[in-house]
Image (cartoon, rainbow over all chains, first blue to last red):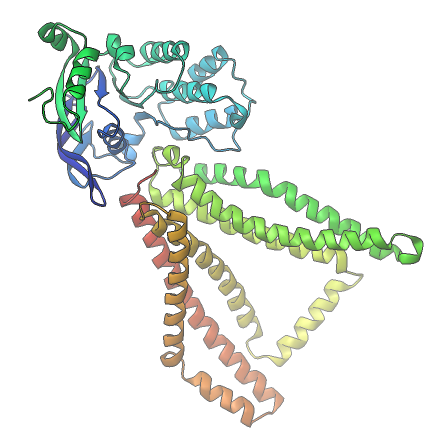
Length: 243
Length: 270
């Protein structure tokens, strides 16, 4: 259990002729809140999809807790995609049973309590819920698992500030302290206060991986400001953080 | 895990099919009442009667169309669109996902056919219907050598043919998934290409595989003794069914290997 939770070596992903990720070497330990930051199209979602096994690497290797993503890791990695995955026919109750049936680490009681606090009834049809409620339900389900890794892809994009607070609080109060939470976002200001480390992605490459406190101490400004300077300076890329 | 997957696939399917099957059976029952009561146009029920027959025919067509559409949609929407984000991150192997979709599709198709047969029986059966049916079968069995064997072979062929058709649709959707865009269009194209490829293979096997068919057909025309004709018919049918069955099994295996490979190694959800 000493090895890093996430280990990427020379990891790359190509889609037909587009390089989505190039030569990613990244190690992330346990019990950390990590921000995966980068502008749109920088490869955040691709990296997360590789980690949860929705994509296969084109180059290099990736292990989660020592395993290549597969059945073994999927049982212990909680993934929140950047879209709705609900089947039309399901009621909340069906979805809770689905999670209970397939994920050994799912805490149904916890999920039911979270639903109750969101005023979601077990008999409610998911199809007829508002977009915001669906997002909160999806997050509640992801956070009701006692996983060793939570992969949250853009959990706060497209929701109002009150919902944003709810989401961040849900993440902070529910994750298992031994676990690592990887949050991808381009809304850094909102998550900055909760992060331990940040990984900067730019044009499919990791251009920085540091503790948030170190960045603040060295640069004398917030990670949000560092990010803005980094990616505003040169739209073509090149003169960024590491350079 | 497969059992759990099947539980949810059947639950989703039954939500659609149980009401549909129920309505079909009720409408056949109503049609039966009309026929049984011997009501005719003079009694003013002619129009209702005709409408009921029309409704029945439409429902039969609907059951067949809905079965086909749902089989395609359950795979496409359930695995290759947004729902795939959930299905491919639960701890099961991709082949189990495919197997669950395939088994539920085949069972639902067979149940749809069964319900359609029952509905016909509700309308058309009469006292002693099953007795007459056994009589017909006995006559056929006496005339045709190996009648039981042929019957079993035919049923197995239909079953394997069904698996083959469904798996070809799956393989086509998987192949369409390889395209970056216009995936539905490419899936249709893949289906057409697969169909053409298999029909070519079938023809080639037909030419070289069982040449006795041609000889047999000549015999049929030359010696037209009834008993001999039936004996030759039985042989030809048997050979054709066995060859067809072998080819269909090969097709199923190829389709499922393609589907499983693409879903395991080349998955790229939008």
